[in-house]
Image: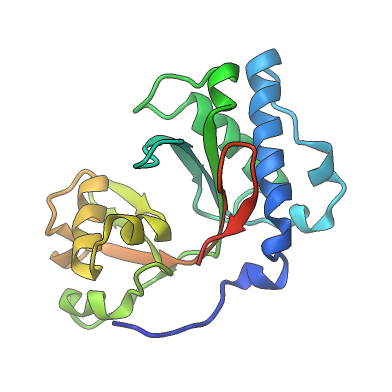
Length: 213
């Protein structure tokens, strides 16, 4: 397995101390939208020039139960929007547009855990044979995207670690997330990309924020 310990490129912009800003802004955007149906970038993001950079991000909502069950997760894998816009819209979409779940209510939001992943730009993993792909993936550090003839799928870095998957299991589940058979990653022509992320997560609803390892 790859042992590259390099930090994501965002580490030059953001640190663990910025976690509260990310989480509070996500909560503010969701609360504002649920109350007024307005998509408004939180003022603290507008005042911070770092959020003018185009950076991809995902927002994940979880139940505060033993399994920390998923309640919503949506984002932008590519750096196509300013981070202030990407964070605001991903937050609202995670709460209201994830097709797997009913929309979150304002009351329910108070009991949910919020997690924000700030992504590096995805890059294609180049290998001579698909069988070499697992050796290029670092579990807990790399997130993956798969593109094939009939769609695409993405799994964040923390998912493989939370599920206890090895690299091959990660690729198999990525394939299924993309709507393909679990061995699709082995089929020539399938494109696998990887990215890293700074992951900020609440320890409890509206509580302290930590930077996940």
